[in-house]
Length: 465
Length: 48
Image (cartoon, rainbow over all chains, first blue to last red):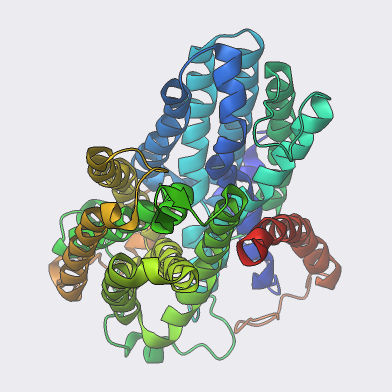
């Protein structure tokens, strides 16, 4: 079989294989699929090319995020069984074909093809790619699972940082009339077509680095000096395994689902309106003291903290524990939201710093959750359980903008408001975080009746169950 | 960097340092480019 190299049995590492090759393999995937958060770069070009509304173009991104959650939830068990190499290869094929079909749609002015390509097919690549390295990283880094998954999921944030400037420069290269430094300049449809083709090819090649580098540890492997008993002795860490099918029957899964949903919903509250928000907070007599370029700088600053929080807080959770770190995300997050609502308008420094820490907690919440799942449900099907949990992200992607836009629309138009107009939305986010805080407080170790019997994991991988 | 508690295979793989360097470079160079470009766009926040 030409593709037999993808099989799990062909990806078992030989003795001596460095585990430090696994994080870059994971990053190769996440840096590519993180492009999904850089779609705003060519939104106006697509609006002009298809002569349609911003909403119709926004649907492309919405379909992709919904497909991310659905495919991660539905295909998670397959990802566990097939192994990381096959999953990464499938992700690369879906993600790259999504771009190529999307390019065909733009070139032929068929918007439905862009929905199908980038949204539907690319979205499946996003879902498989997002969860593909998680289980493998946790198995290679049983001593530092937060660090390992933090590195990978940081890559998802980093992918947008790369794709935004790169896309602008590529569109400028393909369309001499497009000026990336001018916010009013719009690239031609042809330039976006060429951009999609280029990204599809480049991302496929980079993702192949992950495909050919990733390996699973041999059975029984542990890092030198690793003391499994010491790890298991920590509070809220289990050595037992729970299947994905059983995990969703436990209250712990749904508490964590609520925690992730609330943390993401609150973060989106800031992300969704970051640029107009900072201008509105410092508006006096209808004139804002914050220039558009400064507001754009604020958005970039937030994206840096979003990315850094994924690595820093997730790594920190290896030392202070998963439950305490979520107490911080949600508890300190509530205090910060109150500060933002009450004194945020008094100083740009306070406003920027408070918003930045909130966004670092938003990123940290994404990156720490796989390790939290490992602690509660074991390593057996942690990737599949993570996939099911990501439906909370899809739900928050709908709820967060609905809450913030609902409150702001009742007050006027973002970009023409004042700080007081944001208070109802911000206090609602405090309540959302309080719900998450309560859910996290209720998390306890999983009952023994949900645990798998010994060797079940080996039989699952061998296809016996 | 090489962790292993089991006995070494006689056919141990060759020195992995070049592969480690090359693999990490492929991911860190684009990331550094993205970080540099983002930091550049953050500057107006502190100067504007």
